[in-house]
Amino acid sequence: MSSIIHPHGPVTERAAILDAIRGIAILGIFLNNIIGFAGYGFLSEDYKQQIPTYAIDNVLNFLQHVFVEGKFYSIFSLLFGIGFSIIFTKNAQKGNRSLRIFYRRLLVLLIIGFLHCYFLWDGDILLLYALIGLVLPLFRNCSDKTLLVWAFALIISPLFIDLVKLLLLWSPGDFLLIKAQAIDVRNKIPLDDSFALYLYKEGSGMQEWQNWRESGIFYRYQYILDSNRIPKVLGMFLLGLYAGRKSIYQRLQEYQGLFKKLRFWGFLIGLPASIAMVYFLVDGRNIYKSFYGLLDTLFYAISVVPLSLAYLSSICLFWIKRKEKNPFKIFAPVGRMALTNYILQTIFGIIIFYGVGFGLGTQVGPSYIFPIAIGIFILQIVFSTYWFKYFRYGPLEWVWRQLTYGKRLPFRK
Image 1 (cartoon, helix red, strand yellow):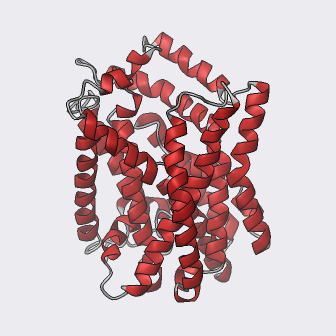
Image 2: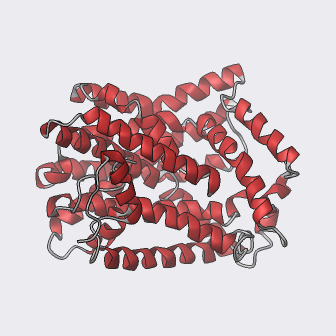
């Protein structure tokens, strides 16, 4: 997540593509997260069928899984690795203590992530990024080849991890699940399918939200462990570290050939694999029931990363072609203050969908949920663009830098 906010002040033209990609990633992540805010992802099929827009919702939900699910978190993870490379290199050139600054940034991010995860929304990714980021310096002196080998091994490692789980009937997150369910029992949150309506039912308010948050962080990290999210994210971190080391984002012209290959093979492999991933995710067979459950893991691995790289390559090639009048630049202000915008999306999601707000959750499907997300994101584009006319950093980005460097930094332009 160090790369979510540009770490070195005002963006140069050559680095603007990183902010644009961050902005695009923020949109993709919100299209994924808003399904959780709205409670739609928790609903049973029978309940979804009661929503008047069920037919179109089904199509949109399928498209979201094929084109969005996992792809933009992967892009964010790669950006984190690029950000680490930038931070380490720049501070080393200045004679600063690079590791000290890096770990201080991660500590601040860890605190922000924990506060976000526990007090606002358990779907937070910041805390996870900070925790995994702690091991990144172990790879800073690896050769390029070693980095790529580690990245590939980590990305495909869930296949072997899930095979072990199946053979041993072992779930690494069980201890967290037991803790979460104990909290829910104490707080009278149902453990059957009706839990999906708990935050959204008539009369739900602050108490229900507090009860939900108390167990949410345990459910979150049970899912992270059981879904093998840690090696997946670390693998993308290392790909980003490689890309940052090569300064690919500053040398787009030189890497046109690579981008074209990644675009071709990424879409050729990623699109059909992503469709297969959706099919096997909903077939009711997981790794704790049969070997067929390993197909979930296989098609996730060969769909998410290839399609993510295809997206990135397409953006880079378009950037090269349309450098002067590039519509992707509209996303850059959002990317420059991505931490602020990420937290704002949580606040919008809670206000619009939870019982403490307007309570639209579980009442509407993707045919309403996605337009709401796009509308909020358009507001964020306008807000971010206007903000940077007067200020150097986003508000949370400024706080992050202040705490990292321990000195007063100018806020206004």
